Length: 275
Image (cartoon, rainbow, N blue to C red; front, side, top):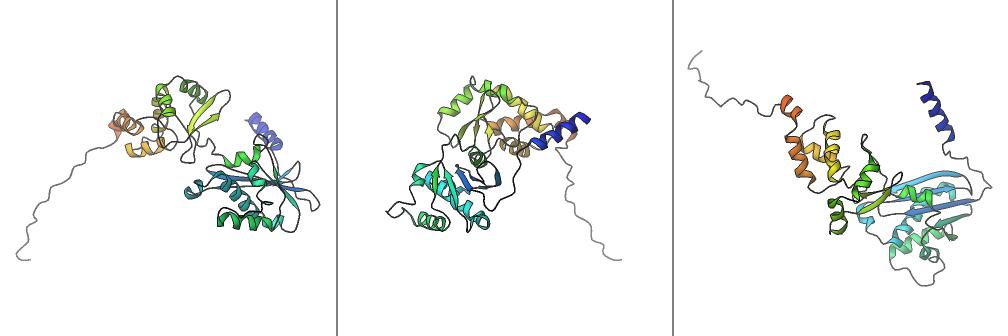
């Protein structure tokens, strides 16, 4: 217990910490945008001052890449307006077309772009390019994270099994509504669906029963609830049908849950003729 407490204190002491702003320090705003969210880091040359992230609603997720990047800069400046107003700062972004949007002589393509560029120009016109590989912090805040990790599952072994599973290969070639995106694990790449904004791993056949047992055995929920819990975190072909069957065959649910209830029939109650 003492060793764990000491290691926790050391981890907190070595973690990335924010710095206090200096009035004469050079300020930069680095932004990025993905299909799900926008992320921003505001700070000096070497130290970060504050972070900002916002999830995009479904209609905004359909914007073009240029419009999402422009929206990310607009939201960042509007969020940090109290800090950026009245002082010079530089803005970094990875798409090069956005760098030339300010000195461009022709009108923007849409009224929305014109409004965003007009608002941004009130604060700065210094927009610089940064490569995607160097824009790590802002990119991290704009990406869908592999959250809600279920304990007890070896995701490294699952990633290795994905390369040999026929169902996973079929997902990659079939025309579906899934947004398959590779996530880097410790030493392998785990294929996940990011259509809902949450990374859901594509589960091979060899791991499907293990995933069901871990989630269902926590509280033995109903078939509908079990399907909802698993589908929020994992994806595989025929998930609903298979989970319904396994839940129906669960021995603990059959033993301790009452599936049939006694319903008394409706009878006619005699009405008394007198008191």
